[in-house]
Image: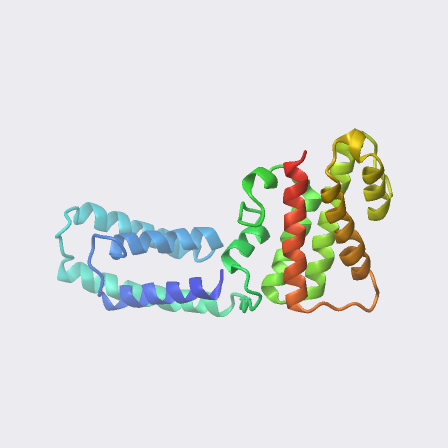
Length: 250
Protein backbone atom coordinates (compact mmCIF):
# COMPACT_ATOMS: atom_id res chain seq x y z
CA UNK A 1 0.00 0.00 0.00
CA UNK A 2 1.24 3.48 -0.83
CA UNK A 3 0.40 6.82 0.76
CA UNK A 4 -2.23 7.63 -1.87
CA UNK A 5 -4.08 4.40 -1.07
CA UNK A 6 -3.95 5.17 2.66
CA UNK A 7 -5.25 8.70 2.11
CA UNK A 8 -8.05 7.39 -0.11
CA UNK A 9 -9.11 4.86 2.53
CA UNK A 10 -9.19 7.57 5.18
CA UNK A 11 -11.35 9.84 3.03
CA UNK A 12 -13.80 7.05 2.23
CA UNK A 13 -14.29 6.11 5.88
CA UNK A 14 -14.72 9.77 6.75
CA UNK A 15 -17.56 9.98 4.23
CA UNK A 16 -19.06 6.75 5.62
CA UNK A 17 -18.91 8.17 9.14
CA UNK A 18 -20.58 11.43 8.11
CA UNK A 19 -23.19 9.69 5.96
CA UNK A 20 -22.63 12.13 3.09
CA UNK A 21 -22.74 9.64 0.19
CA UNK A 22 -25.81 8.75 -1.83
CA UNK A 23 -26.47 5.03 -2.26
CA UNK A 24 -26.20 4.54 -6.03
CA UNK A 25 -23.93 5.88 -8.74
CA UNK A 26 -20.23 6.17 -9.45
CA UNK A 27 -18.15 7.01 -6.36
CA UNK A 28 -21.29 6.68 -4.21
CA UNK A 29 -21.86 4.46 -1.18
CA UNK A 30 -22.17 1.04 -2.83
CA UNK A 31 -19.30 1.57 -5.25
CA UNK A 32 -17.10 3.14 -2.55
CA UNK A 33 -17.67 0.20 -0.23
CA UNK A 34 -16.77 -2.17 -3.06
CA UNK A 35 -13.51 -0.29 -3.71
CA UNK A 36 -12.62 -0.37 0.00
CA UNK A 37 -13.24 -4.11 0.08
CA UNK A 38 -11.03 -4.56 -3.00
CA UNK A 39 -8.27 -2.50 -1.35
CA UNK A 40 -8.48 -4.67 1.77
CA UNK A 41 -8.21 -7.82 -0.35
CA UNK A 42 -5.29 -6.43 -2.33
CA UNK A 43 -3.28 -5.50 0.78
CA UNK A 44 -4.49 -8.40 2.95
CA UNK A 45 -5.65 -6.07 5.70
CA UNK A 46 -8.66 -5.55 8.01
CA UNK A 47 -10.02 -9.06 7.36
CA UNK A 48 -12.88 -9.05 9.96
CA UNK A 49 -13.82 -5.52 8.91
CA UNK A 50 -13.95 -6.58 5.28
CA UNK A 51 -16.60 -9.18 6.14
CA UNK A 52 -18.67 -6.56 7.97
CA UNK A 53 -18.47 -4.22 4.99
CA UNK A 54 -19.56 -7.04 2.69
CA UNK A 55 -22.57 -7.77 4.90
CA UNK A 56 -23.56 -4.11 5.02
CA UNK A 57 -23.10 -3.71 1.26
CA UNK A 58 -25.27 -6.77 0.53
CA UNK A 59 -27.93 -5.45 2.93
CA UNK A 60 -27.97 -1.99 1.32
CA UNK A 61 -28.15 -3.41 -2.22
CA UNK A 62 -31.07 -5.68 -1.34
CA UNK A 63 -32.93 -3.13 0.82
CA UNK A 64 -32.46 -0.12 -1.46
CA UNK A 65 -32.37 -1.49 -5.03
CA UNK A 66 -33.67 1.60 -6.86
CA UNK A 67 -31.46 4.44 -8.03
CA UNK A 68 -33.40 7.11 -6.13
CA UNK A 69 -33.75 5.14 -2.89
CA UNK A 70 -32.56 6.86 0.26
CA UNK A 71 -31.44 5.08 3.40
CA UNK A 72 -33.91 5.16 6.27
CA UNK A 73 -33.05 7.32 9.26
CA UNK A 74 -32.67 4.23 11.43
CA UNK A 75 -30.32 2.47 8.98
CA UNK A 76 -28.35 5.63 8.39
CA UNK A 77 -27.80 6.19 12.12
CA UNK A 78 -26.75 2.57 12.62
CA UNK A 79 -24.43 2.72 9.59
CA UNK A 80 -22.78 5.95 10.78
CA UNK A 81 -22.19 4.49 14.24
CA UNK A 82 -20.54 1.39 12.81
CA UNK A 83 -18.60 3.47 10.27
CA UNK A 84 -17.14 5.50 13.11
CA UNK A 85 -15.86 2.29 14.71
CA UNK A 86 -14.54 1.05 11.34
CA UNK A 87 -12.66 4.31 10.83
CA UNK A 88 -10.87 3.91 14.15
CA UNK A 89 -9.90 0.32 13.38
CA UNK A 90 -8.58 1.21 9.94
CA UNK A 91 -6.62 4.13 11.37
CA UNK A 92 -5.03 1.85 13.98
CA UNK A 93 -4.02 -0.63 11.28
CA UNK A 94 -2.62 2.08 9.01
CA UNK A 95 -0.58 3.45 11.92
CA UNK A 96 1.50 0.27 11.97
CA UNK A 97 1.65 -0.20 8.18
CA UNK A 98 5.09 0.57 6.67
CA UNK A 99 5.18 3.02 3.77
CA UNK A 100 7.79 4.17 1.32
CA UNK A 101 7.38 7.64 -0.06
CA UNK A 102 8.36 7.81 -3.72
CA UNK A 103 9.86 11.12 -4.79
CA UNK A 104 10.99 10.46 -8.33
CA UNK A 105 12.92 13.32 -9.87
CA UNK A 106 14.28 11.41 -12.84
CA UNK A 107 11.75 12.48 -15.45
CA UNK A 108 10.64 8.87 -15.98
CA UNK A 109 6.97 8.01 -15.68
CA UNK A 110 6.72 6.52 -12.15
CA UNK A 111 3.61 4.52 -13.04
CA UNK A 112 5.38 2.84 -15.95
CA UNK A 113 8.49 2.33 -13.84
CA UNK A 114 6.38 0.69 -11.14
CA UNK A 115 5.06 -1.75 -13.77
CA UNK A 116 8.64 -2.86 -14.44
CA UNK A 117 9.14 -3.24 -10.69
CA UNK A 118 5.96 -5.34 -10.51
CA UNK A 119 7.02 -7.41 -13.54
CA UNK A 120 4.14 -6.16 -15.64
CA UNK A 121 4.16 -4.99 -19.30
CA UNK A 122 5.14 -1.33 -19.59
CA UNK A 123 6.44 1.29 -21.98
CA UNK A 124 9.93 0.08 -21.05
CA UNK A 125 9.33 -3.67 -21.44
CA UNK A 126 6.41 -4.56 -23.68
CA UNK A 127 4.47 -7.77 -23.17
CA UNK A 128 6.14 -9.33 -26.24
CA UNK A 129 9.55 -8.80 -24.66
CA UNK A 130 8.54 -9.50 -21.07
CA UNK A 131 7.29 -13.02 -21.75
CA UNK A 132 10.64 -13.93 -23.33
CA UNK A 133 12.81 -12.82 -20.42
CA UNK A 134 14.46 -15.33 -18.11
CA UNK A 135 13.92 -15.18 -14.37
CA UNK A 136 17.33 -13.53 -13.95
CA UNK A 137 16.52 -10.80 -16.47
CA UNK A 138 13.04 -10.18 -15.08
CA UNK A 139 14.33 -10.04 -11.51
CA UNK A 140 17.22 -7.71 -12.33
CA UNK A 141 15.11 -5.24 -14.31
CA UNK A 142 12.47 -5.30 -11.58
CA UNK A 143 15.11 -4.58 -8.92
CA UNK A 144 16.63 -1.82 -11.03
CA UNK A 145 13.24 -0.12 -11.39
CA UNK A 146 12.67 -0.38 -7.63
CA UNK A 147 16.04 1.27 -7.03
CA UNK A 148 15.15 4.13 -9.38
CA UNK A 149 11.82 4.62 -7.62
CA UNK A 150 13.71 4.94 -4.34
CA UNK A 151 16.38 7.21 -5.82
CA UNK A 152 19.25 4.74 -5.26
CA UNK A 153 21.17 5.24 -8.47
CA UNK A 154 24.27 3.05 -8.25
CA UNK A 155 22.47 -0.23 -7.44
CA UNK A 156 19.97 0.58 -10.21
CA UNK A 157 22.82 0.66 -12.73
CA UNK A 158 24.53 -2.48 -11.46
CA UNK A 159 21.51 -4.77 -11.59
CA UNK A 160 20.23 -3.32 -14.88
CA UNK A 161 23.57 -4.07 -16.53
CA UNK A 162 23.61 -7.58 -15.07
CA UNK A 163 20.20 -8.17 -16.61
CA UNK A 164 21.44 -6.79 -19.93
CA UNK A 165 24.37 -9.22 -19.88
CA UNK A 166 21.95 -12.10 -19.36
CA UNK A 167 20.06 -10.89 -22.46
CA UNK A 168 23.30 -10.70 -24.42
CA UNK A 169 24.21 -14.26 -23.44
CA UNK A 170 20.84 -15.51 -24.65
CA UNK A 171 21.34 -13.67 -27.94
CA UNK A 172 24.85 -15.10 -28.35
CA UNK A 173 23.66 -18.64 -27.68
CA UNK A 174 20.70 -18.29 -30.06
CA UNK A 175 22.89 -16.95 -32.88
CA UNK A 176 25.96 -19.16 -32.51
CA UNK A 177 24.38 -22.27 -30.93
CA UNK A 178 27.31 -22.18 -28.47
CA UNK A 179 27.22 -22.00 -24.70
CA UNK A 180 28.50 -18.55 -23.61
CA UNK A 181 29.96 -20.11 -20.46
CA UNK A 182 32.02 -17.58 -18.50
CA UNK A 183 32.94 -15.45 -21.51
CA UNK A 184 33.06 -11.72 -20.87
CA UNK A 185 30.82 -9.17 -22.53
CA UNK A 186 33.67 -8.09 -24.78
CA UNK A 187 34.49 -11.65 -25.81
CA UNK A 188 30.88 -12.33 -26.72
CA UNK A 189 30.52 -9.20 -28.84
CA UNK A 190 33.88 -9.79 -30.54
CA UNK A 191 32.87 -13.30 -31.59
CA UNK A 192 29.55 -11.97 -32.86
CA UNK A 193 31.34 -9.22 -34.76
CA UNK A 194 33.90 -11.61 -36.28
CA UNK A 195 31.06 -13.78 -37.58
CA UNK A 196 28.57 -11.02 -38.29
CA UNK A 197 28.27 -11.76 -42.00
CA UNK A 198 27.87 -15.50 -41.52
CA UNK A 199 25.35 -15.04 -38.72
CA UNK A 200 23.51 -12.21 -40.54
CA UNK A 201 24.09 -9.72 -37.74
CA UNK A 202 23.97 -5.97 -38.34
CA UNK A 203 27.37 -4.43 -37.56
CA UNK A 204 25.65 -1.31 -36.23
CA UNK A 205 23.86 -3.44 -33.66
CA UNK A 206 27.16 -5.03 -32.62
CA UNK A 207 28.58 -1.53 -32.24
CA UNK A 208 25.72 -0.64 -29.89
CA UNK A 209 26.39 -3.76 -27.82
CA UNK A 210 30.10 -2.87 -27.72
CA UNK A 211 29.26 0.60 -26.50
CA UNK A 212 27.09 -0.73 -23.68
CA UNK A 213 29.84 -3.14 -22.69
CA UNK A 214 32.89 -0.92 -23.00
CA UNK A 215 31.62 2.55 -22.18
CA UNK A 216 29.09 1.62 -19.52
CA UNK A 217 29.39 -1.89 -18.10
CA UNK A 218 33.18 -1.94 -17.74
CA UNK A 219 33.14 1.54 -16.23
CA UNK A 220 30.45 0.46 -13.76
CA UNK A 221 32.71 -2.29 -12.45
CA UNK A 222 35.18 0.25 -11.10
CA UNK A 223 35.14 -0.20 -7.29
CA UNK A 224 34.89 3.52 -6.58
CA UNK A 225 32.21 4.39 -9.14
CA UNK A 226 29.12 6.15 -7.81
CA UNK A 227 26.29 7.12 -10.16
CA UNK A 228 24.01 10.12 -10.04
CA UNK A 229 20.28 9.57 -10.53
CA UNK A 230 20.51 11.30 -13.91
CA UNK A 231 23.24 8.87 -15.05
CA UNK A 232 21.26 5.90 -13.73
CA UNK A 233 18.16 6.95 -15.64
CA UNK A 234 20.09 7.34 -18.91
CA UNK A 235 21.71 3.92 -18.49
CA UNK A 236 18.39 2.30 -17.57
CA UNK A 237 16.82 3.65 -20.77
CA UNK A 238 19.81 2.44 -22.83
CA UNK A 239 19.56 -1.00 -21.24
CA UNK A 240 15.82 -1.20 -21.97
CA UNK A 241 16.56 -0.18 -25.56
CA UNK A 242 19.25 -2.81 -26.10
CA UNK A 243 17.11 -5.53 -24.52
CA UNK A 244 14.18 -4.66 -26.77
CA UNK A 245 16.57 -4.62 -29.74
CA UNK A 246 18.00 -8.03 -28.81
CA UNK A 247 14.60 -9.69 -28.61
CA UNK A 248 13.36 -8.06 -31.80
CA UNK A 249 16.28 -9.79 -33.58
CA UNK A 250 15.80 -13.26 -32.14
